[in-house]
Image (cartoon, rainbow, N blue to C red; front, side):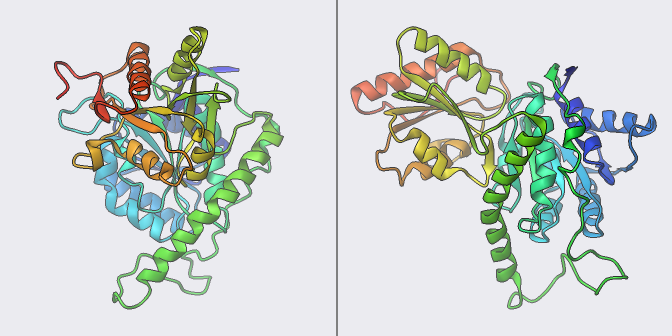
Amino acid sequence: MRIWTGTRAIAEAVKIADVDVIAAYPIRPYTGVMNELARMISDGEFSAEIIVADSEHSQFEIAKHASAVGARTFVGSSGVGLLYAAEAITVTALAQLPVVALAGCRALDDPGNFGMEWNDTLVFRDFGWLVSWAKDAQEALDMTLVAYRVSEDRRVLLPHFVAVDGATITHIASPVSPPDERIEGFLPPYKPPYPLDPEYEPVTKAQHIAPSLIGTEQRKVVDVSMKRSRGVIEEAWRDFSRRVGRSYPPFLESAYMDDAELAIVTMGAYTKDAVYVGQKLRERGERVGVVRLRYWRPYPAQELRESLEDVKGIAVLDFSYSFGSPDMGGAFYNELRAALYEAYQKPLILDFLFAGGREPNVEHFEKAVEITKRAVERGRPERLVYWLTLRGEDI
């Protein structure tokens, strides 16, 4: 057992994965992982090429091209840094390069702050990256290892964001059990099918072509790979559990859902606070459960429908926003509503936004459940979206 921050735990996973190339550029709260990796390499703990870029755009370009020539790569960023790298991020997926990246989720500017928000990662939801979302440092380590296993599988070959909530995971130390020698063999050496190598048959990647050639087919290949990834993810977590002894449900984690009438749905670090609220309300006799998404892409729509099919109301704890969207809810809320559209019984779904980096507390989460409960009792909500940490009146 170790006491590690989230960034330290992820650095350990990168070392275990025996990564070849690391592309670095500083921006909080992700930067700590690169500091740890630089120290590990300097101390001789493992060997890798660490390249310091001149910007986040260059950083993701370096990772993309290193992957194209056959290297196992690691990269990461946060907040506006991820947006600056958008061009390289989109091409990496369409070129089917299995880069693994840390997304240290941070509020976007303006104003610039170091609070936690999901939009910096959710903005890439449509571009072909797998996205897993850790709830603590232990899971961040484990998810990083599984990310390499899944992304490099020839049935998938897609890049992977391991998202961790900034500050609440990246900077807070907690107990972590690094895997022992049983993890050996979990990650086979990366062997790309079509590397950019003069000794192989010549190939091109990220080429510019006429619209009538292969653009449509290239996107369909990514679509098929994303669909295939579900089975590969399930296989990888089963094998991980067998080797390491830690067991995770692949796509969803739930608590107190067996007879729940109300559900809290969220993901990330505040899941533990949500479970505490669920337990507290259960002690008062209220039938409240909690559901957490472990993966954002591929989206676990069927699992959510099955988990939430019997509840009457859902309180969504949402650290995203989507201005002008249907009902003005966040991206997290909108996708959940879309997933439950096909449910046999449609629960009432309310969105509780925690945007801008301001930290909520358990009283906010209890209030979200109370508002949802009253709406269910009335049979209709007064509104669908609430900003609970707002100063002043929510209009």
